[in-house]
Length: 93
Image 1 (tube, rainbow, N blue to C red):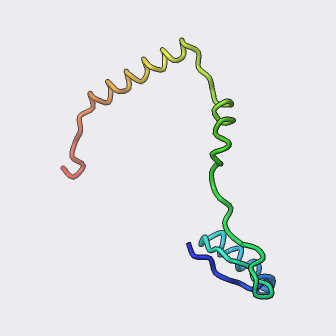
Image 2: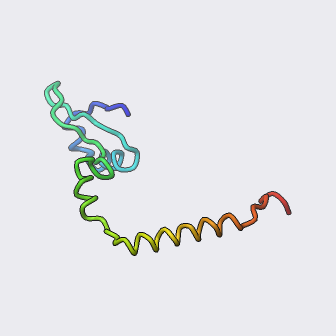
Image 3: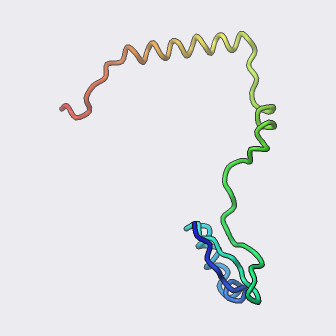
């Protein structure tokens, strides 16, 4: 997305309007003072950083071997049940 230049004075006068544009439309603004870019007004990145992945894996649920075996049996049963379901054409009356 393109970044639009915006004077600091204009941003201050209509701050809520520009924050709403960032929030709802994803607009990005380079705030300019004295002809130089001094700051950015942009959406906050969503999701998690890749650097958080190791911590996320360490904090995730751990299954013991019996639970893993039970889960595998449940998955196999669900797959078998799905294979038994007749596929029908949704356009048929």
